[in-house]
Image 1 (cartoon, one colour):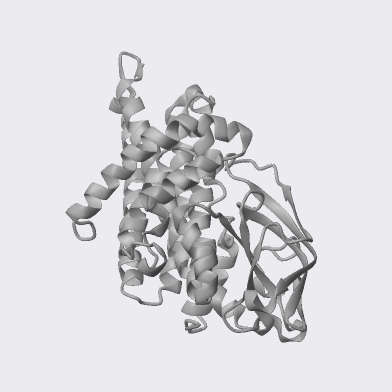
Image 2: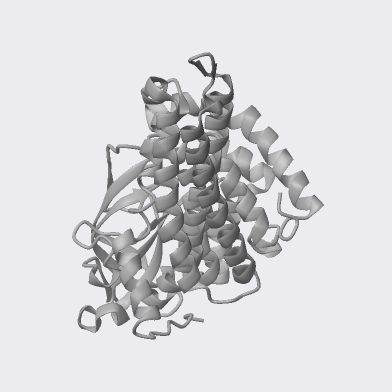
Length: 388
């Protein structure tokens, strides 16, 4: 552990989390990977342990701890080798709940944030659309105000927790002519008439429920608007720092897991009379991969430190996601190669790791989009500002 960032209390938390995951989660992973459904009881167990409340106010049942507790949670979730299960947890805790906490009224927080912290309610964040992808400003879902209600029409796709969640945080256009200045954020219950979800069949993240969601004249109270009308785009952009850093941390953690597993395997696998960790070609390749992982990890820790202090680190978080997800794909690809034919077998962890990791450069903004965002900041000197 890096003592620059982690205290003894952090270490104790990591150990208790590891014990919890080993006892309560790992025995069910294979079942959830096959069924694509994470059973409800585990959400409540996470809530009982306080894991959903790490970053949230004590007023609503949270623990209000520093960001490195979240870093530990993210890292350990990656090391049980189910990207889908991990995604279910962090998409609830740091995508949906982040918006509820930041933009929700006191009444909304009492109704949705408090039971989200206890694991009684599960949330999903609905931004991406079938025709938009990473182009958030180009969304077509509309919210038309009628009296003291809004009527929502449109669709979202690639939504984690999109099938089994209890509530949805939804971005929609409230001013069609205003481009990205006409987006607002709403919250709505799953059982609101007009909401339907179709489960998507994915290459990886098999344990998570990912959905395409349709809104057909969904009518919600005007009080379900979160924050100010037409300020949704800045709200979304403001939270991208955390989302991108989360995906960067996830990437370095799964790469580290892959390297640890490969190192152990190489120390036991004998070829031509010696363990394969004695062959120079493999030793040197492993050293390169380990170096790449460590550089990303240290950078991610430094960005987390700055974010924890309240700095607006959208540029650095974008770099984190861009480089760490590419690194993780490369590391896992070569770790699978270290295992030879066994790496291609489902009973070994590398096949699933490879599939799960491939979403890293796609989800939460593709690498191509991130490069253009960085180019605007670095070359065009564009200065993004926080919404609040």
